[in-house]
Image (tube, rainbow, N blue to C red; front, side, top):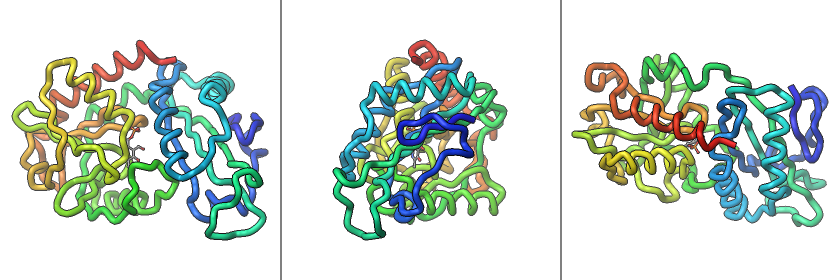
Length: 285
Ligand code: PLP
């Protein structure tokens, strides 16, 4: 696999970053994951805009322009022959001479930028989506700026392990009685034809897939309520699903062992998945 690191395309085993990198020492960095369908980037612009926002929130000047970023994404997709898969991008505050809590001067310490691809044939035609996912609910113990897409992913990883230990696929995070989001996706329920998903705030990541899916749902005259919902409400819902760049629209068929509806992926989730894939393929670049 060819990867990108600080201006160079290299075989993955030759790519190197410093042990003093603040991404490594302090999780001082941000990332994006963009999916690839038909060898093209899905919603590149959405991811580029969110990346710029994450960097700005952390006072990190970008080491690349959006045009350069697009070119790097395209180079990696092409060099690695990715038809379906993902491009992972990470920018950290770089490697100052010594470990220090204070941010280094950005003029003296350049940001570290790394990109790599993940080949995932069958990403769109996923058997997991046909079956639907099971989730458990766990307390949301992350920091309070979940709107910034930082590489600080330890609690979501622990959540995924708790789900695995419980025989489930993923975890939904709960704060003050309401679901915030999934470990790596935005969460939705459907009740009496209404799609309910938490409103945007610092409590959740502003999903790029979420924005597109809500736009398509609106265009298809589906009813949407952006508000917090409880786990009890979710367990009593007709259906549920999640959205993310890496899994698109994923039906959820059980919550804490409670089966939703007839236990099969719901019609709203399946329809939104189909619309999302069809429409995003048309505009992928
Ligand atoms: N929420 C969290 C916590 C995430 O980690 C992600 C994606 O990684 C999402 C939501 C979904 O965001 P997107 O649709 O931009 O992939």
